[in-house]
Length: 105
Image 1 (cartoon, rainbow, N blue to C red):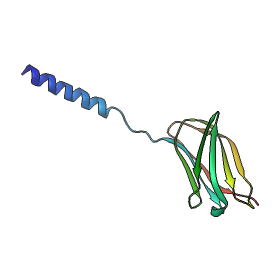
Image 2 (image 1 turned 90 degrees about the vertical axis):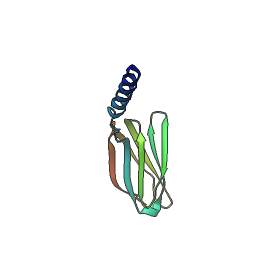
Image 3 (image 1 turned 30 degrees about the vertical axis):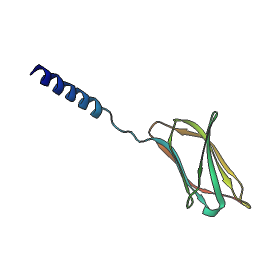
Image 4 (image 1 turned 30 degrees about the horizontal axis):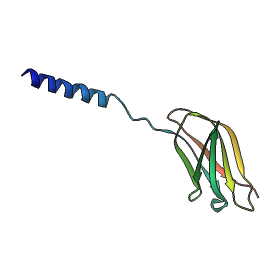
């Protein structure tokens, strides 16, 4: 009986510990680029960290990034010009939407 009690106690303690943690959405940066075919790579830079994603169907998403302040640069294809935006504050669990970015020629 003592062994059964210890086993059940361990099971309940482990179960409680597992369910006490909740999943939180990750931090990120997202946006769209127009014209869609004018952009190739998007970079997010924070300090010495540089992240990159490819634009797909005119949209980009950096997911599960560290909270902090970022500079986002859209690398454009000729004849369009690169686009940069600085001081993008990303908080824990928040996805910052940069909205529609229109590249100039």
